Image: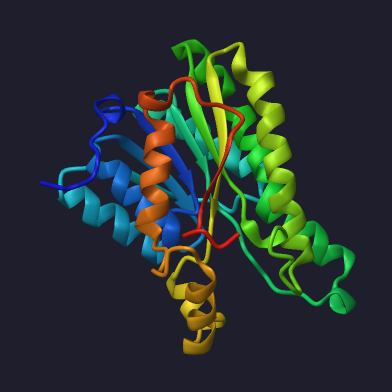
Length: 254
C-alpha cells in the first residue's frame, strides 16, 4: 500500500489535464488515474499521449488522450466539450500546459511574446471559461493553475514566460471571485526546479544541480510526483474551503 494519501472524493470524478503527455503532466495523469478518477488529457505529443493512455487503461484506468494545441482556443473548447460528453462534466481542471522558452531580451520580438502568452496564459482563461457551466451545474469544482517561481528568482532570458506565469497568480485570484458563487475553487501551484526529461535535455548539468540543491532548504531533487501530490489535495474535497491561494513546491528555494 502506498505511504501517500488516498482521496475517496476523487474516485469517479472527471479530471481534465492540459499538457499531460510528459513531465509533470504525465505524473498528474498517472496520479489521478491511481485515485480512480476519470482522466481526460491533451497534448501535442501524440506518441507519448497515446502510449500513456493505453498503459493506464491496460491497468484498469479510465483515461482518454486527445490531441490539442492549447493556443488554438476553438480546438480547446471543442475537446473540452467532447470530454464532457465522454466522461460527464469536468469536476477538476488542471491548466498545466506551458513552455519555458528562453529568449534574451535583445532577441525578443512581438510574435514570440504573443506566442508565449498564448502558450502559457491565454488558454488558462478560456479553459476555465469552458468548464464553468458544467461545474456550476454540479454545485462546484476545482481549478488548479500552474505558475512558476521564475519571476521571484529574477531568472534571466525568460521575461515573456515569467510575465505570463506572474499573471497567472493574479488571474487565479480574480477567477476565484468570479467563480466562487458557483462553488468553484481556483488555486495556483508553482513547481520549483523539477527534473523532467526536457530539463535534462536542455539545461540541466551537474554544476547547476549542485547549485540548486545547495540553495534549497531541503537538499533533495523536486520530482514530478511531489507536484502531483499537492495537486491531488487541491482537487479533492479535503481542500473544500481553500481558494485564491498560491502553493510553492520547490524544496524551499525561494
